[in-house]
Each structure stands twice: as C-alpha cells, then as structure tokens.
Length: 151
Image 1 (cartoon, rainbow, N blue to C red):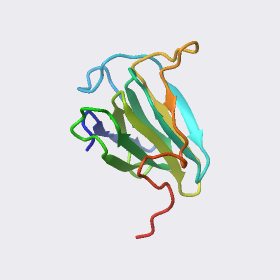
Image 2 (cartoon, rainbow, N blue to C red):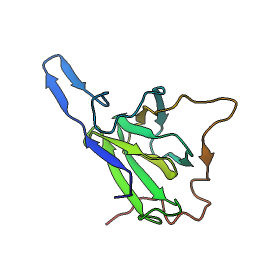
Image 3 (cartoon, helix red, strand yellow):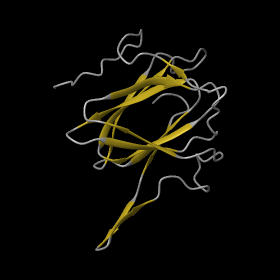
C-alpha cells in the first residue's frame, strides 16, 4: 500500500427498512479535521482522474455503484514512490480510502450504472486558489492503463 494511505472497510447495518453506513467519524483514527463534504458522479466507463493536492487529505468512498479507484505515488522521498494501488469499491465492497497530499488519484465507474462518490476532505475548497493539480487521465507519464483488464 502507498505510504500514508489508510483504507477502512465500512460496516453496513441493514434491516427491513433499509440500511445505514457510517463513512467517517470524528473518533476514527484517520480523522483529522472537517473541511467540507461533496458528491461527484461518473457515468459507466467514464474516468475521473488524475489529480492531487499539495495540502489537502481526501476521504473517498463510493456510495452507489462500483468504481475502480486508483492511486499513484509520485512524492519525492516517499518509500512507496512509483507505486500504484488499485481498489474496487462501492456497493459490493464498501470502504473509505484516505489519500494523503501529493498522491495522484482518480476513479472509473465500472459496471452498468453510474458511480456516485462521496469525498470528505479535511480542507474547504478555495475557489480563488484551488489546491488541485490535474493531469490528463490518458495522456500522461503515469504507468497506468484505465482499460478493462480481462484476466
């Protein structure tokens, strides 16, 4: 696993009314501070990548659908520099992925329905000076191919 990344398997409590799933609590070991919460959606087959933050820590989960969530460590001095982590998260595998600053990340909606992601970053988005560096999802020097890998 990439240094500084924390994965928390999420517990789903179901009953005849539906279900409840806690994503992040202020008494979780990986909780630092609250910045904001937002939802983003990708249609099936769409890649929403790559980006990283210089200061912000992200806490991503997929609340509906399934996604291939990928991280790439390009941080100088990191013991896992050059490493890629790939997770399949969502309805069938609920988890929270905490992504430290400097780690590139993104996701691709897989299956036949949209993937809806919830992010709870530790910072509020700054419209005047965004802490968000973007890289084209396909045309870049990151050693990752978003295409389906039939094993």
